[in-house]
Length: 346
Image 1 (spheres, rainbow, N blue to C red):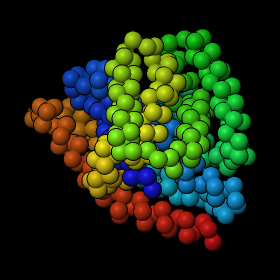
Image 2: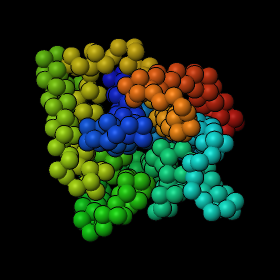
Image 3: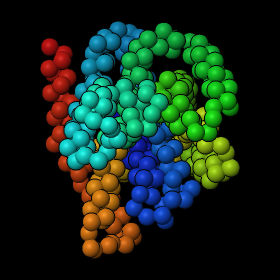
Image 4: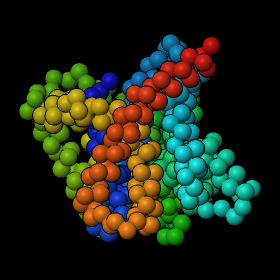
């Protein structure tokens, strides 16, 4: 476990939360908050890094099987996804359909995490909309064991990434503005290079982790990485959104992940605080729960005679999501994860 990367999950989950708060008040309808969708890019790159960190050597040496790996991923992703999906379906209002048959099509696509392959917003954003990213993660997990032979020589993996990156740049350039979200933001196939970036970062991490890096050097590395990321983040308003959905953030996210994975500097010490780590542990619950809470609040405000100022409601909603995430993680996620792995590994 790399504590700093766990803590970063919480920080980027909060950025996604902020990006969605525009549904409550226009104060959040600004670049500073809306650009928080970069949190998804961070999670995809982090996924490539962490999966390689935890499973690359085990799969190379056959100490675990592909089946065991996939079961572990199913046990991690599906229980909470299905819980939040059924809650969203029960609450209603989060799927645009034209009858029961169409509703069932949408529901089945979400249930099986195939909805992001369908280039229609009423599919990939239906029910609990943040779950579209799980479709991407599912593809990453299916493919990862088959990428293991490429990790024996990082150059082969780099060549694959380079080829995919060239195709992406060309494809993005020729994609009409109205189609960029379905083809470049939510599509699992076009988000696959984000995962490869994470795998490549792990190869670099393996070469750097035992280097004699001083506390001062580590601190400078971390602070520089934060500065680079901040520069990209605030300058992003000048960049076409199609690139910001993925490739624009490869470099700054890579700098953040690599610098903090080494855990050599002052910022890493701050992020190693137990509160941040717990926040990272519950970040998956936080990510899947937060928009349901925000949407419920918006629906309540529409019919309520009591209108609450955003600077009161947002902190209350944030704390509510944190509480629900803690309950979910300790009393649902962990027990369900353990039970499913035990059941499927028999």
